[in-house]
Length: 407
Image: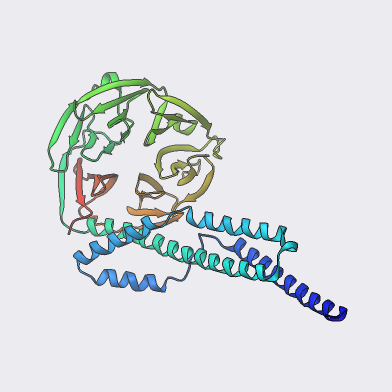
């Protein structure tokens, strides 16, 4: 081959080489723009939702089971790992592009296109699953609350305006001033004496699956209550402790209405981990932090400012970095409890509108206000039953037990 032909051949190879490098760089730019939170078109979801609503209850149960299977099949790390691999492969290829042939670059682009297709499929599937799950939670609760199939227990208010409630997988615990009421799903009730003079009024109660006991907060004192032995035990002295929330062996304590928070672990003996002031969390000195609730990897905090606005702030539990805020038009949202991962139930006490949160959005859950006059506390009971504690105009308290899996 003469020199001119060699030069022309090398020129063509060089042009191909640069063309492939440009294409790889374009793929890198496209990958940088991909985000798992993007919402894809939901036409197929709408059809699926219409199909679900049209089916009988038996088919609806099958549908929910299949949605669960899809949820379980998706690993949250799958998208990030695949995207990271693509980015690393691109960087490695660009670093050694001078030693690669055009054929090698072409093969790499084909492999890269296949990975990008997988990433886009994960995005679509994940968006669809999230929307299905959000509506599924709302619909299940709403359907249960509007059926007349519930168990009802009525008892005197006894001037307890801030009655607390907690639920395990087997029992519901309610404070009743001088005593505790322990319910099970059959309606059987056990009365446990509470020494209000020594222990003070009950500020908060939670169920600890790690300890297999209820934790009860009196005035400056923490107690455990064991349902199997009916023993109330004084475990720690915590002055100025107002609220608490728990997840597995992690417990977050709210002192002096949010002046500072402490993170403890229940492994073995109680172990202090870290503390934060309200200023470190981004609040003002005039802000007040009330109820808290851990759900998944996030914690919700109900707070009010000096303008009297009630909002819910969501933080990352591992870092306590602020993520987003939840409120309605009236800024009067009260936090009730957590449901599933990174979702909570809340209510506007003025309008009596009941909500499920999904990120910073509120999904209203309709309920029969003729049955529930004033909704005060709610809890999930072994993930099958939904409990509402409400007040009636005649100075009565009402406990309602709904089966959210029922027909």
